[in-house]
Image (cartoon, rainbow, N blue to C red; front, side, top):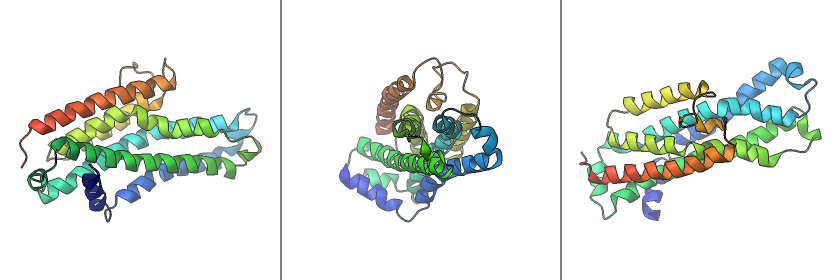
Length: 235
């Protein structure tokens, strides 16, 4: 597994993946910089918990940005093999198919995890820059807002890795991902079983419920994808 992970990391070393990893959290924080820059008095004046308001404002854009990040990164990491027609060569090596499949998942997850770290740092810095440091920084709440959406969105990551690997035409997973990002924007009042709603962490359940269910369902879909990939013919 370690050798396959190292190989996948080398393949993306000189690609524009890392720019996307930075672009997602930077875009979310930049939107809030503009938001507070234009409406600072309205957003701050008379508010009791400025940090909580900031976290809620950031959260509005986290889920759509996460969905787009999952879609693009999953598609691009699979496209490397599709463009080079190297699936057959890769799978002829003494390595199990489930290891190849899970490696793509893990590498994509690691990149998204780095985006979450950057979002956490960016949120803290934005709050300090806006003058909220007079109140204690709610590190735990910011951590949850930065990392919980990714954990709740693991089923979507598993689905997109699966689709991107088995389909040569990346227009299909990209279309599904863009549609999912749009659905997420309007999913606040959707039923709790809608997986595109889970990264919002909003509904009748506590946020930890969406995280727990997301992890469980994500692992199940990942295992189903592995089994399907093992049975498929490769070109």
